[in-house]
Image (cartoon, rainbow, N blue to C red; front, side):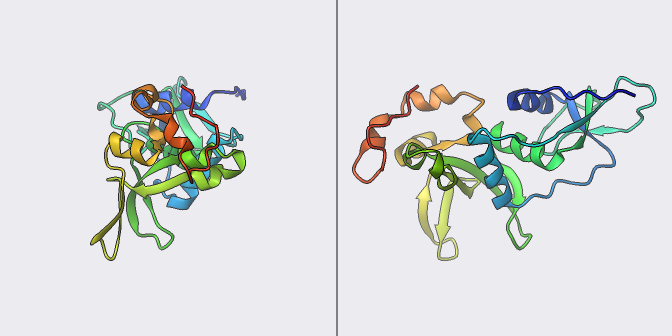
Length: 206
């Protein structure tokens, strides 16, 4: 049996996961990554750092009898065939598939193990200040985009719609490989230069 170590773009892995070309073997454990770990993984992606090894097993061999199942968060028609089975890198690829595709909702947990749904955003006012601020720029918010306090009675921040996201300068990471231009089309990047934004003379471009 030979081994190959090809290099793929992250977007390629996401497309293969969404289409079912990459699936999990039936013996793999379930998805279980904490919110902060996912946020830090997204920081790594935005900084362009390597994500580590992903090990895949090709299914075009009659001796491969593992039953495939979709990566969690991906809906596939029944009996969708897989080209490859993901042996190593499940937690990373599942986190990235859920956060960077579709509605961007990730089914994760807090540090106490309590289940929760989150979406991730880039604070554009912070991100334009330089690579050293990327960690601070990646935000984890409730899946509905509404951040509350006082046991849910008071709203701290509401980015539940694209217009509200643009008003706050919070870009959904789920659009990085998606329809980012539609979101940016109505975004006035001069807002990044307003007093206190820290944007200086930078703009989002695009």
